[in-house]
Image (cartoon, rainbow, N blue to C red; front, side, top):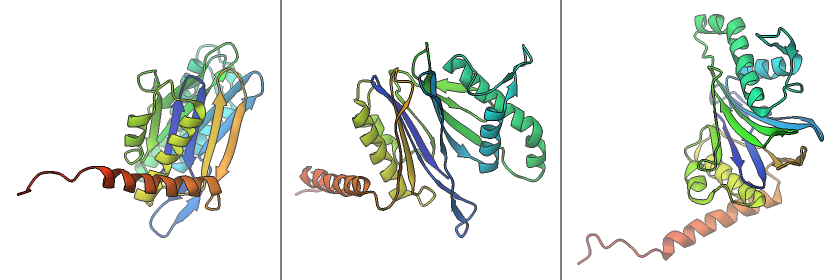
Length: 247
């Protein structure tokens, strides 16, 4: 299992992903799930992955090595696609190509062809965008009404984002809320774990502003964890007890 979240606000984009993968309680490993592709001043793209690790790695490799455009026959890579919408289509094509090569044999071995990707970024001349691409190659896009997207084990972190994130939330505030969402998920699900990778992109900067890995010795994250726990305890203690059953 995994947890990844992308938050698109007026100032920019936040992407956060854990690194835990497991094939059973006694087979736990760490793999990067947040990937950056950038040509500074021309494009900056981030992709977070969830699902079958072999599938997601194959798709990522294919996107850098190239996929043939079905109309022109030209070899395209994630560094050559002209718009973010076309990048989302390109990622979908890469997923379908991996399925064409490996999907049937995986199914014969009772292995699930399972991959979902968060795709966020900006290409020069276009706007900053955030998409979720499914294993069928289709996708949806974040909007002002729904400014964040999640993949993996999303239920524990979703209530925090629902209550606090809007498209007008500041970039640093969005990063903080995303980290609270990640901490809540890590506390409630053993399939999600540290280190945690973080990236932020400021709108129209066409470069990654923050690219950081948070481990168990990260002072800010440990302080955030303790402050959030204390704030929750104080909040529920400040609420009057329910009147039900009183004499």
